[in-house]
Length: 125
Ligand SMILES: [Fe+2]
Figure 1: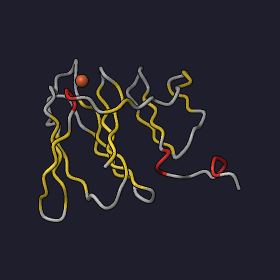
Figure 2 (figure 1 turned 180 degrees about the vertical axis):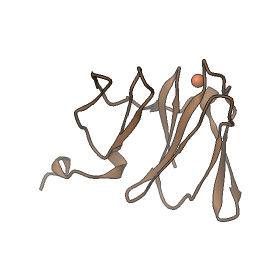
Figure 3 (figure 1 turned 45 degrees about the vertical axis):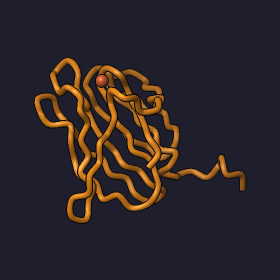
Figure 4 (figure 1 turned 90 degrees about the horizontal axis):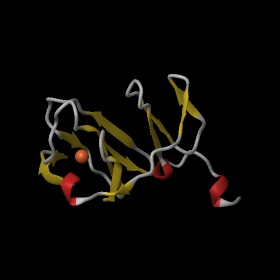
């Protein structure tokens, strides 16, 4: 079977964000997603840039992640996600909150960050 036709690989995760209501959806492959009557294209993940760099430090059996980024209503980190081939973790963040979370980092995968102004970014881990 052609590898392209195997569905359900988390490493090919797609994220969709509704610009009207802020709904966030995650799929393991491309899908037709619509929200608030609008068809949403999958977000294109850019490489993580310096302004959105994630700092990690071990805490107990987890990693504590911090993003030095403003968290105002106009400009904030909306979520962080950690994806491997068999696991998906997402932490929703909110304006006026802290741009930080804890993940159980196990194995290689991707860290995703979504900034409401600068969009989706990812980094290999
Ligand atoms: Fe940003």
